[in-house]
Image 1 (cartoon, rainbow, N blue to C red):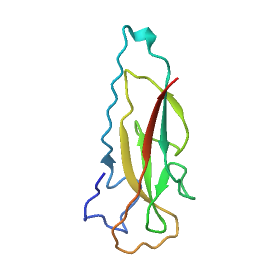
Image 2 (image 1 turned 135 degrees about the vertical axis):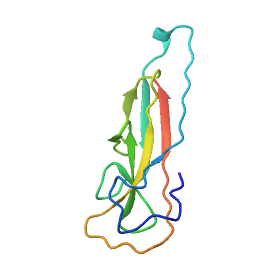
Image 3 (image 1 turned 45 degrees about the horizontal axis):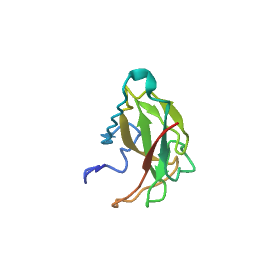
Length: 116
């Protein structure tokens, strides 16, 4: 996900600058009932201030991951419906009391999908 160069460090509020995370999942089986439960996990290093945000290389800045508009706890597995893959978004969040300086930042996650 690229947030671009126009992020105002004093305007980060956990809503502005939200970006879709490209994600697609296709499951095939002879019949709908034959696909076992699917486990979905966002893997990464969670921030100390938000369990749904991954750390960045800028102190006090995290990237919160939302699944269908709801914060998805990092490293927590959930069962999902293969017919309705989740919609994932990412949004910058700041630790309360942090003063950010304008800088480029990076973060990383891994999406793990397992069939039981």
